[in-house]
Picture (tube, rainbow, N blue to C red):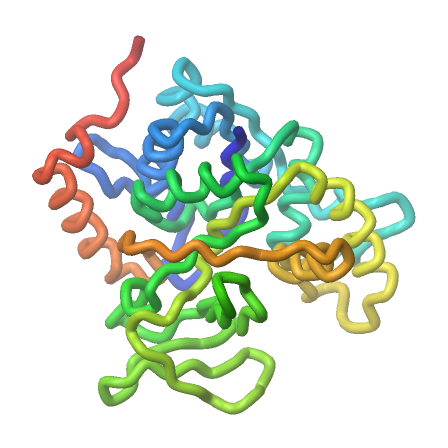
Length: 296
């Protein structure tokens, strides 16, 4: 069972490559805690999706810590890696989106897999829930309580989930913030603002996917770029959209798996100290050792 970690994006608002910003007492990164929890849950392979220029720093830090514990592969998200007959302007620098990132990794996936972001701290419970869902052959998203995902340092983007009987009907990508004690979402599509309560579920790009999706992805990304009529220098092919296309075509369901786990991220540089304090509190509770990995 494979854990796919999206780590090719730069943290523009944070001001650097936040995936390798130490948050633990012995220099551990956010990603180290995710891998540790995933291994505990039963995942036995890790695929990093990174920029090629960051290969050496990933391999010498995170890779060297886990390569004796779990199978590791590195995949480069390259804007030139597209289906035959598809191209984007040579002047483009920005990655082509999360859907394209996963497309670049399809050759490294040989079974059911989970997808997470390297930027986020997800909590141990979530990895166990996702593993059980994958074993059932489901497509699923871990649903966090929106109140557990907000920052006091500004607005954030969230995939706000709307479900019926545990099946997701739609995910509304929105700018979300607390305003006068209320949680207000503003859809990126330009639709009217709305309010939700503290416990409303949101997707933090932690999803469980079956291998069969990879073949569909190759076809879907071709169709996306072949039929795209906008600006190819700025567009993004997003994983949630590709997954939605697959579910519609295959008539499969996307299950929402609620969790009480606390999500933490570093959207702004001022979020970093809060995350460090939270991880330290988990160490004090005995949930994590003070040093995650020891060389064998």
